[in-house]
Image 1 (cartoon, chains in turn brown, cyan, green):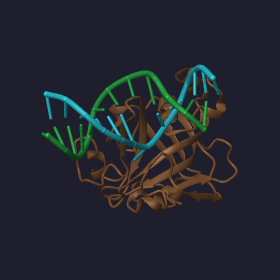
Image 2 (tube, rainbow, N blue to C red):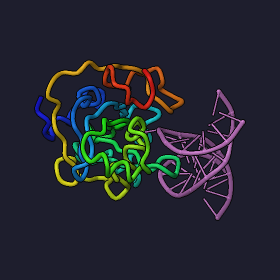
Image 3 (cartoon, rainbow, N blue to C red):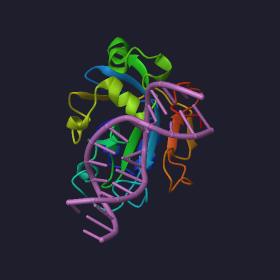
Image 4 (spheres, chains in turn orange, cyan, brown):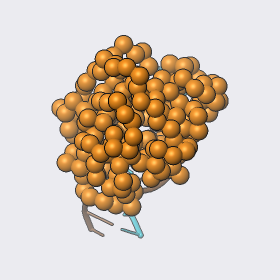
Length: 182
DNA sequence: TTCTGGATTGTCT
DNA sequence: GACAATCCAGAAC
């Protein structure tokens, strides 16, 4: 499948499923996408549900751009913007490139939890609020399409109180590096 | 202006 | 399994 900017001109649910197996790099550091979650503007737990604000502006900006926000006052979380008000949260990567750099940023932690969680992967890749609104098709970001089809798991999303019945979480089947089991 | 709670994680029991 | 850490967006006043 082609991975150009039109890849993101679709509902976040489709994009989230098709991103599994693709490769995400930030400054040359990163790896294969293992786990995603879809959010949209009709979604009561989505940041875009109550309309555009200064914080979520990137979600209403051009598709194929990053939406980065701070979670629990501590962590950064990376989203890919799709249709207006919808985005895909990147929850886990397989550390492939720049592993030593990621280990240093994460404090020499075990590979198992290097990029397994939205806050952890942002720390490992060095992504912060400064990267909010940047294009995914220009440095420091780099996206590569998956080479082959991958079996994808589907399940309810994590860490939310509403909308848990929607199966909008996607993961690579068989991976032991998911943030939580499906 | 003040208050509340969260798309999380690390540590301790 | 329980809970603290820590900050800010959005709501309420």
